[in-house]
Image 1 (cartoon, helix red, strand yellow):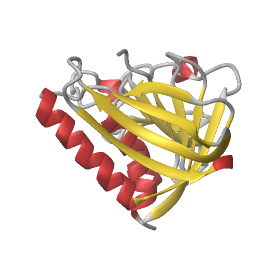
Image 2 (spheres, rainbow, N blue to C red):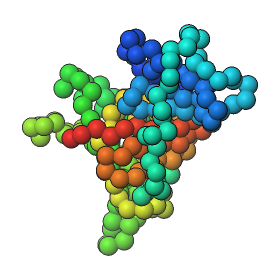
Image 3 (cartoon, rainbow, N blue to C red):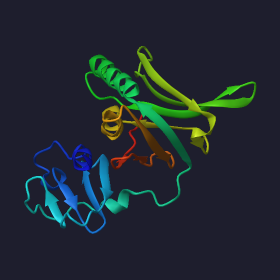
Image 4 (cartoon, one colour):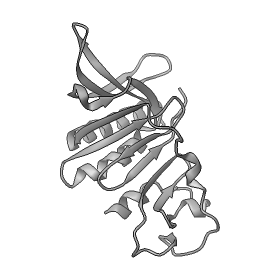
Length: 204
């Protein structure tokens, strides 16, 4: 199942041969399309090299360069269910129907404040078109201590986010997710029970 999770990040562009593959080095089993990456820590029973077609396609991208060097500014630890995934996929379809493409969504995480006191953590996915005519959003509310660090917002590809969380949730209908935010225009790191994902931010 972890290998299936990693394969989600392979490139669909068949001319980019080394991006079409799952790669194993001394540290990780990894796949990337240049915009996101899925990986797990290396397993001894899998030898170093390319997987899927078994061919050597030249050097694999130096993925170590995309990892943030500093500690995360904020950490969200949240339990998500298949219901949240269904809502996210429905939102993706609405955006695609409205824009004709995969437009970026805004991922917001903040504390809901009542009488000047934080009461709950809100994990929100929101979309507003360039003319401010179409607005779609979904929210998941959880305990106040689910967010460590300041509130944050970042722009992401929604389909990449769904790929990062759907499979770990699918089998058990529920799963814990850790989401690490670093700073604006830095990738978001997502930790799940099947593996890890890193998603590059998009511009407004």
